[in-house]
Image (cartoon, rainbow, N blue to C red):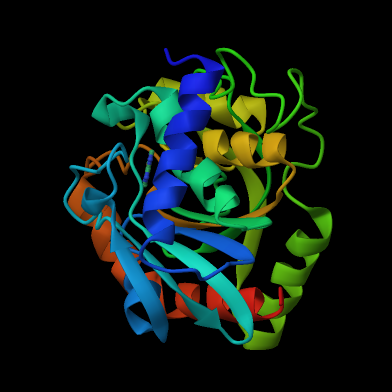
Length: 277
Ligand code: HPA
């Protein structure tokens, strides 16, 4: 575990290396989940930086997860996009998993827009649905704030009330309505993975009030909230959690559904981001 000073040094170092490539100051940080990376390929980018080229930056090993920052505008909104993120199950410490959020805040981002692929727990959901995240459960993963607190970033014991900005949740719902996109709303629960959940675990999570489950996002939201950023998020429900009795869940199925939902996902995310300028 790094000390506060070491951690801050690492973040500052990453920011400095990116600053050698671009002086672009983003307002919004957008993290794209598995299979949802196409948005970054399609915007008018002013610069991009591969994670590999940033000394000390965590790099993903999972297929379907690219690894680069893309800088540019969506509408009039200045964004830094993470095309690919690292996950706790890859073996990184939580401090490293959330490092990118702190780096993007260091670049100037005040808003974090999270996206992910998730399994549907709510039985009213279908594979291919989109869900705006209204709250989260992170109790099954280690807190990313464990370790020495960096007071400059935030307080030791931050409140997690309204992690997901209520105004943004409503704005994303309105945007979906205007676009004619069916949008669910619900609570996201994070697990460490990499294994998918057992049927008993899904039953338990449902009892806890979770609507969707995935292996990212909640810890990133905690760190952003700690930093005082505004946070919002959209999940792509790529499958019903646990799969179906005759067809166990696979990563391929997750990627296929993400591809199928990509057009609506892209419309909703780009349209709602353009309203954040
Ligand atoms: N469980 C956990 N993570 C996921 C799932 C799931 O069912 N689908 C996509 N990511």
